[in-house]
Length: 353
Image (cartoon, rainbow, N blue to C red):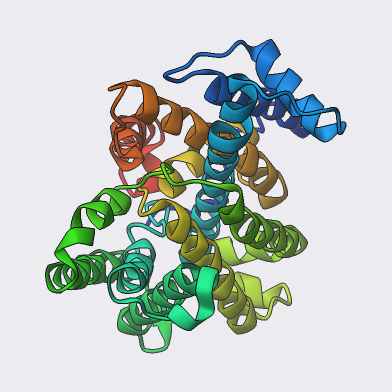
C-alpha cells in the first residue's frame, strides 16, 4: 500500500518565506501579463498606471486603455486567480481527506455534481428567486449532493476505503455528466451552445459582480483550513493515528466536506468545470515545500492562482481573435505534468520503485 501523502521522502526544498515571496512575485507578473496582453496590447506601465489612478482616487482618464483594464481584463484576471486558488486548495484538502494522491474534486465527481446544479439554473431558471446568488446556490448544492453520494456509496463497514472512493467517484462523475447532458438536451436549444462552452471552462463573462462571492468563500475557507493544518496532517496519516492524537475525525471530515463543496461550487458557478488544477498543482507545490499543510496551503493559493491566470491568458491568445475553453488548456498542461510526476514519484501512486 502506498504511504500517506504527508510522508515526505525529501526535505523541504526552500524556506517557506522565500517560496511565498517567489510565488507572490510570479503571481504579480502573470497578472500583469494577463491584463496587458490581448487583442489590444498594453504596456505593463499603462496597466499599473490605470490601477494606481483608480486606487489613489485620481481623476479617471477617458481612455481606451483605462476602459480595457478596469472593465474587461482586470476583473477577468482576478477571477481566474481566485478560482485557481480555490481549486488548488480544494484538491489539497481532498487528497488529505481520502489519503490518496490521485484524488481531486474533478475525479471524485464534485465538479460534475456542481455542473448539474449550475446547468439546471442556466437552462431552467432553478433558484431564480435568489437572483444573482442562484448560480452559486445551484452549484454548491450540486457539489454537496455529489460529494455526499460518493462518500455514501464508497463506505465499506463504516470505513472509508480510498481506492473504492476513487472508483466510485469516477463512476458517479460519469453519471452526473450524463445528467448534465440530459438537462442540456431537454433545455432551451438557444442556450445549449453557451452552456456547452461554459461547461468546458471560461472566464469570458467575468465582471466585478462575480468576484466577491468566490473571493469571500476562499478567504473564509483558508482561514479555517490554516487553523486546522495540524489536524489535516494527522488525518492524512490515517483515521486511527489522527484519533490517537486527539482529532475529532468525524467532525473534521464533515467540516472539510462542507468547505470543499463550497469552494468547488462557487468556482464552478463562475468558471465552469476546469479539470486537472486541483489534481496537479498540489503535487507541484509539495515538490517545492514538502507535505506540511501549513506550508502547502498558502503556497498552493499563490501558485494555483498563477497557474490559472496563465491558462486563461493562453486560452485568450492562442487562437486569437477566438477564445478557447480554459478546460482544454488545463488538460493539455495538466495531463503531461501528472505523467511526469507519476514517473518521478511513483511511491505516491502505489507503484513500486
